[in-house]
Structure formats: C-alpha cells, structure tokens
Amino acid sequence: PFSIQIEMGKVIVTGGTGYIGSHTVVELQQAGYEVLIIDNLSNSNVEVLNGIEAITRIRPQFENLDCLDYVGLDRLLSKNEGVEAIIHFAASKAVGESVEKPLLYYRNNLVSLMNLLELMPLHGIKNIVFSSSCTVYGQPDKLPVSETAPIKPALSPYGNTKQICEEIIRDTLHANAGLRSILLRYFNPIGAHPSALIGELPNGVPNNLVPFVTQTAIGLRKQLSVFGDDYNTPDGSCIRDYINVVDLAKAHVVAMKRMIEQKSKTRLETFNLGTGRGLSVLELLKIFQEVNQVEVPYKIVNRRDGDIEQVWANPDKANNVLGWKAQETVEDTLKSAWKWEKHLAEKRK
Ligand code: WQD
Image (cartoon, rainbow, N blue to C red; front, side, top):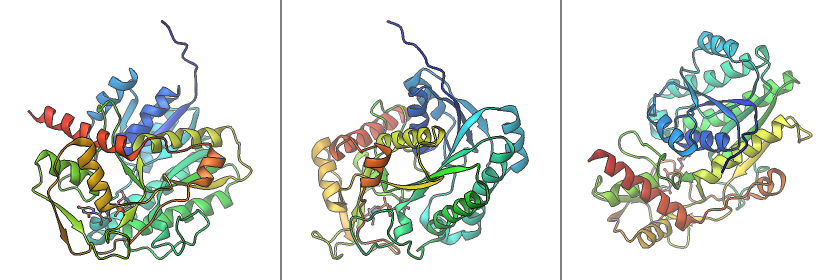
C-alpha cells in the first residue's frame, strides 16, 4: 500500500508541545500540513515530540523559543518564509497562579500575542487562530451560551488575559485589513489521544478535574475533593461542557483552512467549541468509575473561589458554519483519559 502525500502549507503552532497544542499538531500533520512548533517548554516536555512522531511518523520542526522574545521570533520567521497561519496556544493557564502572579500572566499572555501580531505583516503571515475560553462568558444569563452572549467581568487575571487578547486581536484587525483571525472559545477540554502516546501532563498537583480524577484513581492522590454540592443544579455540583481534546484539535484544522481559503465574509470570527451537553462533577465522576471499572475516593468540600455554577455551549455556529461537531462520547473520552494515566504509570516503572 502507498499513500500520496499532498503538499499543504506550512503552519506555526505556538505552545505546540502543550496539551491541546500537541493534539492539534497531530491533526495538522495528518491533514498534510507542515508544522513548525514554537514552545519554551515552560509547562511541557520536549519528549512530547516523540509521541507526535510515533502517531504521525513525522517529526515536527521544533524551536525552543519564548514568544516574549521579539527578536528571536523575528529571526525565526525570516528563516521560514511561506507560513500560511499561526495557531497560538502558548500562554500561562493556571487560574489560581494568575491571582498570585498577575503581572506574569499579563506579560506572558498579552505580550506574546502582541509580538506575533506585530510580526505577522512583516513576514507576510495573514492568519491567526487564537485559543480563547468560555471563561469570557462568566456565569451566562442564558444557557446554553452562544457567541453573542455578553462578555462578563473576569474573575481572575487569567480570564482577563483571554478577554483582553480577544480585544487586542479585534483592534489589530481593524487597523490592518490584511489580517484574519478566528477566536476559538474552548469549553472544558479533557481526555487524550486514543493511542495514549500523547495526553495532558499536569505540572504538580492538578487544578483541573479530570487529571485529578485519573491521578486519584491510579493512587497518586488520596482522594478527590468535590468543590461544593450546594449549587443550584440537579445534584448540587457544578456543571461544565467537557469536550474531547482530539475533537477540539480537529476544529483548529477546520478553522485554519477556513481562513487560508478566505471562506468567510468577515476577517474576524468567533466560535464556541463544546459539545452542547452539560455534565455535573458528580455525573462525570460516576461515568468515569463505571466505564473504567475503577474506584475514585472522594469527599465533598467547600466551594472553590471563583467557580462558575453552570455553563455549557451552544455549539450551533461551529456545527453549521465551520462544519465541525464534537464526535466522541464522554464515555470514550474518559476511557482515553484513564488509558493515558495508565500509560504514564507504566513509564514511571
Ligand atoms: C471543573 C469542575 C470544579 C477540580 C478552568 C478555567 C478555564 C480553563 C479550564 C484553562 C468545576 C470541579 C475541579 C477538583 C472539583 N482554563 N473540580 N475538584 O474551573 O471549569 O475551568 O480550567 O486552562 O478557563 O477556568 O475547570 O477542571 O478546574 O473544574 O470538584 O479537584 O470540577 O469546581 O466545577 P474550570 P476545572
């Protein structure tokens, strides 16, 4: 058997060794794109490149570079002509840490984006996909929440950087008619590649629910703390829209193609990336234990500061305009998360 490799364009993925970034690099390569990863490895491991290569049989080009380094970026872009788009994942993302170190978050997240936007026209790059978040909606007045819902005051510096970055992009596109951008508002990405060759690598004690659940199931943590069971929801725990990370990655390929092919009338578009289904913490925990046949000890504790009670996406716009839809079931996604945790445990032996 043989396959014909159709030559596609070159794409830059900042934060390409991170959780969502690495899954997106895989999908881009499988769609035929040539990928250049820019990552400073501040919250990821260079060995992720081996995982990507094991899945796709292609090792992406990698540059250990901080997006705060304007001169370094300028040099790198000079050496790489013909880049069709940038997918910009590189950012600091821990909500709690952002409260402790606001300036670190504002500098990292805002200046990285500003550097890229400033350099794009100088190097003939027209398109940028930006990683935004459902956090911009705060607690929405109407559920499911659609893209036209108002932006609410941010509850953390991290959340605020996502809002400000969206505005920086809007204003920059207004002033530069040669640029296009798609803002992707992620709901809660979970799971891992079905191969278990790449997945999430949380640094220290996980803040996010699913990594904490898998680490508890494998015995790295004693028990899960469920943050509150007295919310105004059917079982009292918070509700989120958990989206499979591979599904999420695929949306980036579609969004990027849409810009490259100039399919849209407007140069700036925003899409929710979610399943449209809300799941409570306790429901997720129950499904995880059932599909994986594993016990997860847990206790109910106080609410976590700054948590939204319930949010889930109206994904109609992404479904209809992008032609993208979340495919994986939450059952399979939670199986993939567990398979990945077991893979990590094997490697530790
Ligand atoms: C999900 C639910 C918790 C841990 C945050 C950011 C968002 C995005 C993803 C970045 C909540 C509950 C969690 C635990 C628990 N950013 N929970 N015990 O808070 O929806 O979103 O991360 O990367 O912008 O705000 O995600 O996974 O932290 O929490 O009960 O140990 O699980 O209260 O209801 P969240 P999460």
